[in-house]
Each structure stands twice: as C-alpha cells, then as structure tokens.
Image 1 (cartoon, one colour):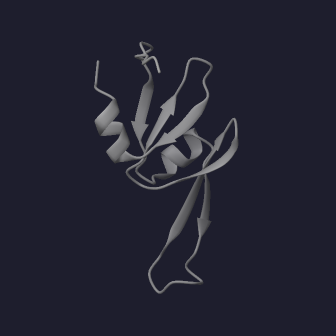
Image 2 (cartoon, rainbow, N blue to C red; image 1 turned 90 degrees about the horizontal axis):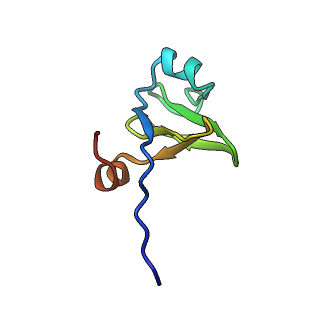
Image 3 (cartoon, rainbow, N blue to C red; image 1 turned 90 degrees about the vertical axis):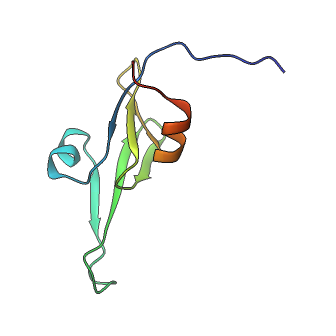
Length: 83
C-alpha cells in the first residue's frame, strides 16, 4: 500500500462548550439535567454526513469547502501541528 502525506493546511478550533462557539458552528446542545444530578450537556456539530457528537476539548476542523468535522484531542495532537 502506498502512503500519502496530506499537505493542505486546516483551520481548527478547540471546542470549549461556550455559547459563542455553539452559535458560530450551529451546534445543537441537548440538556440532560433531567437524567443526571449535575448539569450535563450533549453537543452535536452539523457536518456533511449529518450531526456528529462533539465533546468539550475536541477540535472542530474546517476544510477547503468550509465543511466541518470533529477530531478528538488525542488524535489532533498526534496528527496536526501548528503552522
């Protein structure tokens, strides 16, 4: 199998659960407080493939066509570097 190195820069921002980011990326926040004693939220990022669950600390990457996708923090730190 031939290996390829992706050479396109990607914009990315780490999700912090703030209202600003929820509005900016049109994230759907679902309140789960009825099911848990402590405040709990689930977040969903709209993508080309449909909604993808995102957690605080995950990264939102934006591609060339302004599409978004979720990258977990551990994968992001292993595969991306700041330019």
